[in-house]
Amino acid sequence: MPSFEESDPAPISPSPAPELPSSQVHPATVSPTKHQKENDQDDDDFIPENKTKDDDGDQKMIFDDDNEEPELKSSTSEIEKPSIIQQSKPSSSKSSSSTTTTTSTKYKPSSADMKHYYERYLPFKSIFLWLNHSPAPQTDFTMREFAFEYKSGAYHRYNSFSNVSEFKSTVLKAEPTRFEIGAVYPIEPKLRKQVSKNVMKPQMKEFVLDIDLTDYDDIRTCCSGTSICEKCWKFINIAIEIIDVALKNDFGFKHLLWVFSGRRGCHCWISDYRARVMDENIRRSVIEYLDVLHVKGSKKSNGGVASLNMFRKPYHPHIERSLEVLKDQFIDVVIREQDPWRHEDRYEDLARAVPDYRLTNALMKYWKTTTDRSSADKWLDVDKYYQNLKIQSFDLQDWKKEMIFKTMYPRLDVEVSRQMIHLLKSPFCVHPGTGNVCIPFDPSKEKFNPLTAPNLQTLFNEDEEHVENTSLQPSIDLFNKYVRELMKEELSKKRTRDESKENLEF
Ligand SMILES: [Zn+2]
Image (cartoon, rainbow, N blue to C red):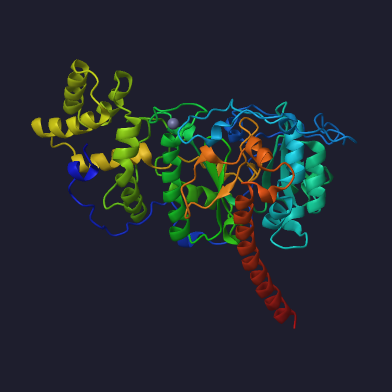
């Protein structure tokens, strides 16, 4: 088999860091500017653009009127037994298989399952502490928006809670299929009708990232749509590796929480104070720095993605560093496992990505007359024809590096990260289509495997009453550690702020 090194023996030489383009923010400029940009969307009935394509792809209806809560169920005196527990022996879960493709249809939790899960398993207290940054309720939590999504597709925004017990009891009563976390507002979101609309501007929110495998459908051949397997999940693990180091090293963020989205992607929550107070302009700059492919909102070309403006020499250090990660895995993950250019409907992507029409035509002609040439063969054919035709219009090794980027570099949803008004599913919610729990994980410890992630079925089998006896507990422990570290920093900062305030008063 060919390797990157064989076909590209020239080492990537270190190059000086160029100036960042004006559209990209330098990490040092990400300072805590404490305000929010004027919101261009002030409609209560606003569905954030990307909500329509989130994990479920469901179009949501909004019931935003306080008097109109069709799904808000009254509490029942008799607690229904979860359907899973009622079963004598549940069907075996596919999630234990190591290579099976998983799809959205494997298991859908009933409302009784969800109620039981909320009552016994979901760590409300930990989520409260994470968002509140202190043991006693403060505005970081009480003025925070939560949204509920229901089985019918109804979506109820602007819920807010005074404390953790109200948070938990309201979720138990409402029985949403999931709840989402939004921004902190200047007043309690549930009181928004008492103030002018101008007041309801988001003040702060965690910086969030969303990576989804459907954005890789032009390169993955093992699965499509909502299906995933271990092969294509490697794209997500590679994305995590690249984004994690950039957020920490280039921007100095410390409190990163990676969370499985429950089906085909993951989210990253950055909870540093500095990140929470970024306005939308800074959020856009940070995400554009990371989103070098500009997949979303741009016309696709050349092998499925837009051309790379950042691919000018000398390469930006972020490009150099990312390339080191990508080139090591390109042969295995793309060429060998996905074999994306084997068939006629796809090899044109590779031929047309070559920036020389003579070479493109020669390759197309050759591949049309040969059958069943693998992507590895075709990758080497490009070398062979480049030499034979004595092509000089472009540098072959540079082009190969670009191709590696275009096929494997993280594909990000810019709007999810930019908009402060955008809500994102809370960690530990259950994906309504799969029953998977959206667990946090630590990519520095091990590569996450979505096929073995805790599922309501498996959890209830492990212990239907005590979460500490289930495979969910390690994820809760990890989350609690994350929350403790964040709170420790917040409390020491708050002390410093209070002391300096006292000094001023004195
Ligand atoms: Zn797959």
